[in-house]
Image (cartoon, rainbow, N blue to C red):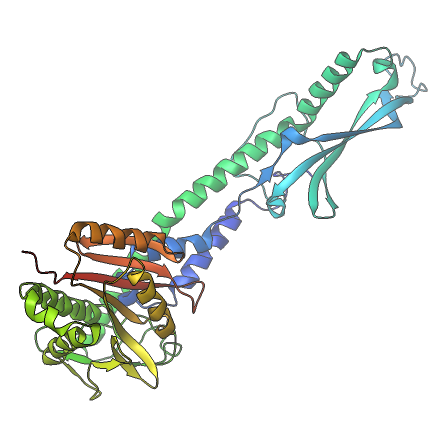
Length: 421
C-alpha cells in the first residue's frame, strides 16, 4: 500500500461530508433556516468535519532480524552471469504508530508532490490489540554494517528511514493541510448553502402566496405538533420554528414579545419598591406579572398564563409546558442554581421557552449581586454561553438534560426592589 497515493481523490470524501450538511439542512424549511444563530450554523457545520489523519513518524520502533536480500550484480560481464545474487542481510522491521484516520490512507491527496530520486515505499497496516501501525521492512547487507560502530549503525538507520518514508511524509503533510483547509471552510459553506435555500424558497413562497397556493415545508410530515397561537394586543405573531417533539410550541417572536412584556413590567415596578416589598414573597410578586401577561395577550386555545406550583408562570397543555417563567426572591448565593434545577425538572421539551426572574428585596449592593449571579450562570455544569443584554439581564444557553444533542435558551432577569435610604 502506498499511502495517500492510491484509490479515489480525497475530494470525493469532502463532497460526501458536504452532502451530509446539505441533507441535514433539508430537514428545515427556509423560515427556520433564516432564523439560525451563529451557534446553530456552527453545529450544522460540525456534521461535515472530517477526522484528521495523525501518524507519529517520530516514535517509530525497529525490530532487526537475520535475512537474505537480492543485490544487483555490477560485475556482470556476460549474458549467462546472474543479474542479481543473494547475500546475507539485516532486515529491520519498522513500525510507525497511527493515532487516527487510517481509513483515509486509501485516498489520494489533491495536490501533486514531486519527489526526485526517491521511491515510494510499500507499507501495510498492522493491528496489535488496540494499537494500529504502519509497517515496512528496510534491508541492509550484512557486509556493510558488520564492522560499523554503533553510531555509524544508528546513522545508517536514520538515513534509510528518512529515505524510505520521504514520500509518505510529503503526502501525509499535504493530506493534513487539505483536511484542515476543508474543515475550516465548512462554516462558510453552511452559511452560503443556507443563504441559497432561503433565497430560492422565499421566492417560491412569495409566488405561491401570490397565486393562492400554500407552500408546504419539506419536513412537514415530521414536524408534528400544534402551535400555541397567541394574539398580542400590541404585537403581531410571527412564523413558527421547527418542532422536534409532539405537542405545543411557541415561536421565537412570540417568546421575545412575552420577554419584552416581563421586562417592561419589571422596569415599571422597580420604581415602586415599597408596594412590591409589602408583597414579601415570590408567589405574590409573580401574580403581578401574571396580571401584566394576561392583560397583554389572548391565547387562542382559551388557556391563560397561569401559576403552576408555587413559583412559576407557565402555559401548558397535556401536562407539558411550552412556556415557563421561574420566579425567585434572592435569599442566598445558590438562588439561581436552585431555580435552574427546577427549570430542568419542568423543561422536558426540546423547544420549551424559559425565563428565570430573580427579585432583590434586601441586598443594597445591587452591583455585587449582579456579579454573583453572573458567576453562578457561568460556573454551572451545563453552561454553554451567555450574553448580557442589559446589566441585569442575560440570554443564556445551557445543555439540555432531556436531549444530549440539544440546548435550552434561557433568559434571566433580576429586578431590584430594595429600598435605599
